[in-house]
Image (tube, rainbow over all chains, first blue to last red; front, side, top):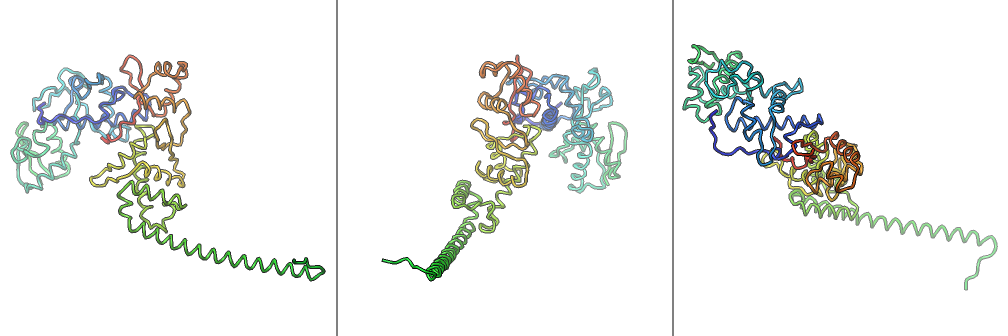
Length: 204
Length: 242
């Protein structure tokens, strides 16, 4: 994953609270802990413009390993947290803020590393610091704000184009871009055409 | 030398005297009451004017507010109850603080088991959520606000553990062992069973029971990654709104 920001990630106070790294036996406390982890993981990924998280890699990063406290989150606990994040709030989860990437990333055309090849199930997950529907809203807002409604753009342009340089979706994972665009297609607000790798999109 | 009346006439005289004393007394009393009432109403209106005149200072300056509240208290005027005298401002202020305290307690209940330090609470209320919405408040204001909730039967109370005051938003008593352990955590940052055995000369079973109870109430968090299980207070997590 490319890191676009150079400023260090500002960890919340919880990160320096030693019990944060131990699964809490009390269910109420546990819930609060899961919420805090979910929000930490989301802001971490957002800060690093990271869309997928490979747990095996992540347990060695500062996100899950607090070197100063010498505390770490083990793989099993990291999985438990992502599991919780992946569930909807109705199911007692964290509002589908994550999603396991089940097949080993074979459909990804972005060729990014850490896409889960050979890591088995529940190894890599999307982290939805914005869900595809939310990204769709962001895209619509940008398209309307820049008066590009009705015009045709390539997906490559959307992600890497100069026009959207300042946008949060700049440099976005192509899989997520396509998913977000598909949300718009379903809403009848966009149309995707062209073959794989050369998709274009028209906004209505 | 006066001579005691003799005969039947004396009875009549005495009743008359008592009556005139009584009327005189009543007269005196009513004049007193009238003058006191005038004084009181003058005082009330002065207090009212004062409160109105300085309402902005009362709102913005915690020291001034505390002094004002103390003055009201000494003369027997409850600044919270006496809204008609002091104008709605004082009331509104404390209710606003109270609302924020309740919000904060609810928000953080799953994190701290419904026990929150008055100081932490003040810092958080002072910060406010949105920009510019911070209220400058003192610990005294927080305590007053919590007390103003009592008539509602809200179950909010002030508990003192060691030298620190806490707001308890769950109507559950701490027993003395639990309070002691929380006090130890205040000083040392965390506790373990062996620390309790060593410092308080408690039996293992006693130490373990107290800790298990605190854990069950969500008042401490467990850290199992050290050589011995450690129990930490979540009080310092505040301000981490995620």
